[in-house]
Image 1 (tube, rainbow, N blue to C red):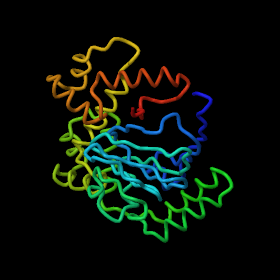
Image 2: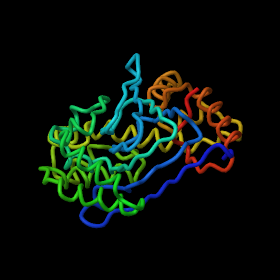
Image 3: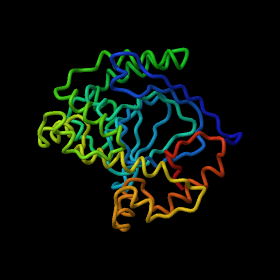
Image 4: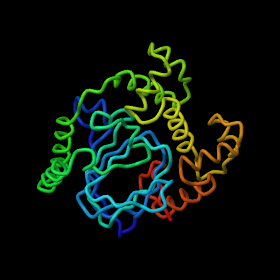
Length: 285
């Protein structure tokens, strides 16, 4: 990274019972190497409690970005979206497993589909103001993450159908989205209609759509942008016999054409050779 980029990033896995719902809690402070990010339609719900200047989000179907002051809640997206950092930025956040956001929502996850909410809309103004105040009084990042974890433990509620959704989602993830959903329905002793209903309530999308997200994530992250790319081969390995259909879905998922995606990745790796960017997210021009 260049000398002008200075970021403190602290991440940790929460203890039980949250470890079954959350990949990690994180603290971010500083000036990232990019002011705007392009995020994919990956199966990764997100909660951010903002402690600095407002940031901006723009879904790919929106004309303009929307500012968020207290933070945001993003359910599993179906299209790429943009995140705009203030400089500097400061926040704590949660990377959820696909099913992990539901116990903290007052509404079905499908109501947030490609429509990020403010934290105030989810938890209420006074509760968010109190949490943000306590976070700003904390002396260390780990103390802040402990406060956030305690808040989440207090707020977690029991969700009907969570176990079966977690079981089926985990099987989808393990196969990179390649397993037939009908096989999973049979193994879970549940009808496809019941599964689809529970998935929409808890994750926001159907099992088939979730599998598609995992399949595309695996496909895109496997692309070696430093070597010549046979897009026909990439499309075939992703299960597409029609390359035009693949390009359309690639653009929906990443916000970029395949060729443009490679150009952006190459540019970022060239400009920030030491940055541990595992394929996502991408800088926006």
